[in-house]
Length: 332
Image (tube, rainbow, N blue to C red; front, side, top):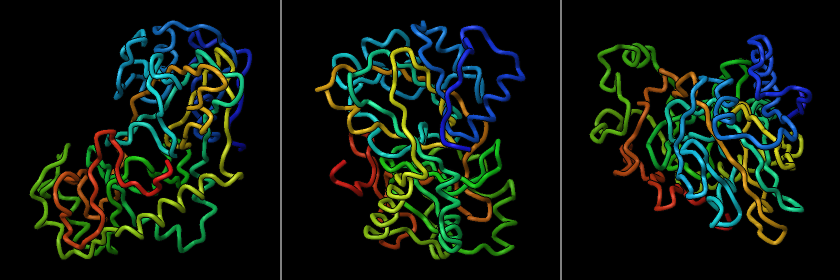
């Protein structure tokens, strides 16, 4: 299926039948995003109700609230600081990457649009994975990212809960470390599945796991390995055959499957020379944990604000004041 599609003649202000919502969710999983063009003005309660049609059917907000936002559930984005939060999302990412359960869907509603530019770009994470050579698929499938803000550990490859396709995952702006786990042994797998395992029930970063992780064959990427991996990921998602974009019209509603497609703001989205840009964004609670495989032996969280628990000299970078992790590209 091509990346993205428009859905016409469907007024989302009226809740569609469940079979229609099911079809929409399937299309989102296959196509990455759907555009409902020029729906016009939506109140915050209408936008919230539409957002709850998808995924976990519940809003989940993890963002700053701008003074002009009419609801705490609205993340108000703008190229002018007095009208919204500026400079958001210039790198490929999935929203909610600080969470163990990523947001299932992201909903954008266009309020004000500049005369030129202002697009959001999208990347098909299943197609990007399928394009990799066999050996790179295997290599990526044995890697985990550690979020620079929350320490949550996510796999770089997982299966989409709707399509069951292998899809990629990596937040280029919030990665604090990349860990490669060793080929598992049966004994390690059995131990990790046990309810008595040291991090059974772990739900947040916890210091003191060092003795459980050292000398087990894990490798934390060094600076050159990190730069190479993140550059290659950026290039992979930016290939024309994997990438699409949407040029907004006022009133457009764009729904994104947050596991099927990564997204980023086009450079012109932050440019003020072509006029004011304002988007309202809502995010939907996910339905499944994005955990590394049990056989990896890794916990769901690692203490990113401490020392590298693997003691191998690899990059272990906590977020800065702006929430940014390892800076692999100083031009962004």
